[in-house]
Image (cartoon, rainbow, N blue to C red):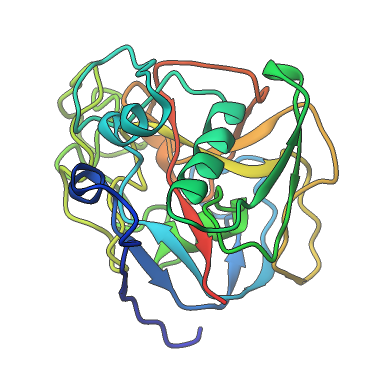
Length: 273
């Protein structure tokens, strides 16, 4: 494993004072290589977690999930079931998340990462991978950032407790003590960050990724972006109403891109080069 470091990305001066106050800090994730997926020995491992080698370029990742304040100020509405400015926005589709990324890019005078055609949930989206605007992380980037150099089931080690993440604590990871079930989202950044300065990579809300869901290969890949097409878009991390095993760094979930639920949000990414 290579050496990593993190640093904050300054926000554009074009944003209003209220936006600057609400905006989530971005953290530089230095590129490197790692093993995506889980070892066959990992408890509660799923068949689609085939372990394989991935090399990634550097990128920026939001330190927190996008909050309701951030979303409302830019998009003019707040679709969330659990209301609160500092709570993560939820009830957003993959298309909603992509639209937010482009809107924020335009607000900060950046080149939008996505070319969107059509209307509503029938829209088609193409990713301009050279654009400097906001985007969703790829599935590989998300897992790399979540692990923060670890190879255990969670970035917190062999287990994650209810003092480290917001989830269905009465259904902990197998063999570990039961804990509190909060029954809702809590403010973004309520727990200690992982080693790379990222909050809530486990729990609170699931997070949309760019990728179409598809089977992993076992070959080494560079900057993968998922299947070429599909029915479901990947989401990662687990939510406030998920069992402990679903918060594992390698666990994969997916929904149709038009799906909106009260445990599904997103965080931002940007190219570093």
